[in-house]
Image (cartoon, one colour):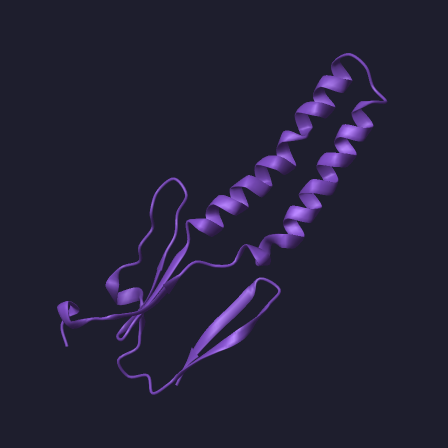
Length: 119
């Protein structure tokens, strides 16, 4: 079967729910930094408020990397494309081959891991 005969079965992106813990942590750290900035004055206040950009930047980067990840399942392979500033597509030989798979089973998400098992 050639690549021209390959048909797309499913395509999608990861859920942002997997990042909920990081988003909550970044929000709490940002609030704590803003609250602690009121105790300082002058340069310390400016530095503390500048530090608020770190958790905001972390959350924004995670959000961007999640929405820039795309899974495509065809009748022959599973293709993973990801990249925020540049796209990374694996070589065709490194994609999971589905030609010899009899069945596929999606396992539930655990902390940062989910998988599709092929038999």
